[in-house]
Image (cartoon, rainbow, N blue to C red):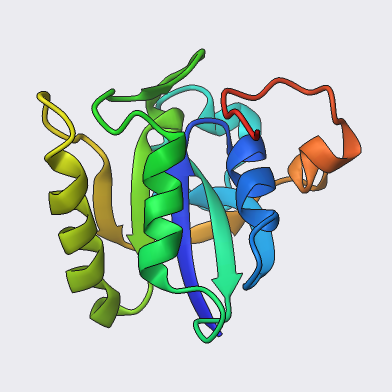
Amino acid sequence: MKKVLFGGGCFWGVEEFFSRLQGVTETEVGYANGKTVNPTYKEICTNDTDYVEVCYITYDEKVISLETLLNKFWSIIDPTTKNRQGNDIGTQYRSGIYYIDSKDLDIINSSKETVQKQYDKPITTEIKPLKNYYTGEEYHQKYLKKNPGGYCHIKFD
């Protein structure tokens, strides 16, 4: 199994979107690449911890490729907005791709270069190795499955 993390605004929708894809075996929401230990949701909302809300995705590369996951990711975000997706505003809502396997970097960069051709403005989506990750609070996990009417900036249909 392979792993990748995507930040694309509120993590509820990102998790719900990717959980529906065949080949994605597990999703979890949490906080990545910040500067404190074991942050809480309240702490990351202060814009002071450097954390980004992410969906941690485990997938079977025999069923779904990283390229396909990246194409799906680009389709649900505006990669040219900084620290914002939809109504979600703040550094914790920046878009990003956080990789664990350095062999994935060429695929990620190539995907970004392809998508950049669709935009006049530069893509601001971060592409960084995962340096740390903390699981989000239980009430955030599978939030839109538990609360189908919950807010989300992503269109699922």
